[in-house]
Length: 122
Figure 1 (cartoon, helix red, strand yellow):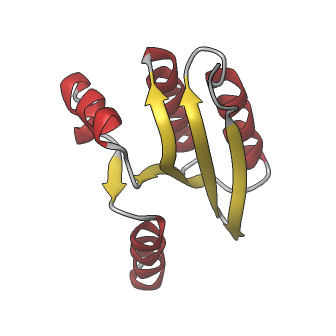
Figure 2 (figure 1 turned 90 degrees about the vertical axis):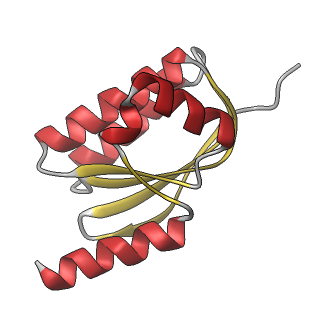
């Protein structure tokens, strides 16, 4: 039996929201992640940081959800930034070339700091 998948939103600030994922990001979890992310975008948070530190597994459905979220955020003049990417997911992003499209940071704190710095210099 696999551990339950969880989606939390530990931080929102204006146009920014952090969505924290934990567990297996697979075909069963991907629709819920996409739905929650699109709700955040619709609620005025088009800049998303996905905290992936708790993700224990990610298949092509999870990757597809991230790509879909990135596209929707981009369409809303926002962005999707990945934070704390586990090694296996990092390799998947590298093999598919998505690591060249999606920005990534070693931690949520680093992603938040970069976002804050970009806001103050824009």
